[in-house]
Image 1: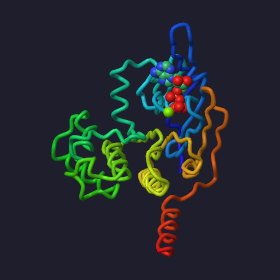
Image 2: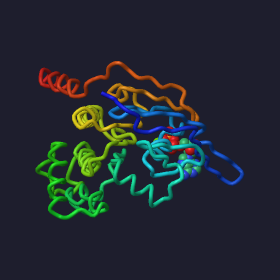
Image 3: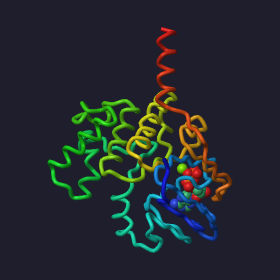
Image 4: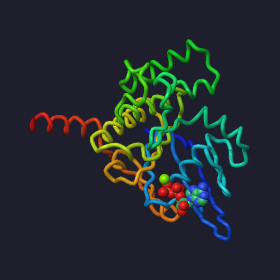
Length: 251
Ligand SMILES: Nc1ncnc2c1ncn2[C@@H]1O[C@H](COP(=O)(O)OP(=O)(O)O)[C@@H](O)[C@H]1O
Ligand SMILES: [Mg+2]
């Protein structure tokens, strides 16, 4: 169950200057997230979803505003300080998986641990555990190109998990997947939220995906125009089981 405040954004602005032109990608965003939440950020293309997620994940800095993460004001930290926070607290999942194609699944999953400077034995154990957790225990030596899209996204989730983050940020994690595989990935993300208590903030433009979250935030032109906490969320594992049963009945 969601508990104390994990992050707080106050009057966040992100302005891009293109010659004479100013683009207000985010224009005064106030948002608070609680530990253990599972939130969807929705909105049409260009509404500021990715900009918001990148600022939350310390991949980008706001032009103006205050960002408080676990009680610490991180608004004025420099790039190196932000990178260190990013490594400790966040795991990332992207639409295009963003795996390295020429190296094994093991090497992909270990990437965040190499940055963290962990010893080899511990790295190997953590990698095994993360891959087992997403159901890919036997795939350590595969190359991403030998796997399906859904499997590649699970490798990306294992990579996001391996550093034991307190938050997972996902930008259109199902955007490149068919609808059944999308529900499969949502089942993994729900499990990570429920069983590991990880706070999840994900961007999606798809209502059928957002319904697996417990909070819906709608952006329009860089503003939050709706923010609703739902009292229930769809269960992706149950939906998947129903789909499988239906397919078997039809076969
Ligand atoms: N690096 C950038 N330079 C200039 N404009 C940008 C940049 N990144 C995003 N924008 C603009 O900011 C707005 C919000 O973009 P974005 O956050 O990517 O929206 P979304 O993810 O909702 O599609 C858009 O108008 C986009 O064109
Ligand atoms: Mg985007």
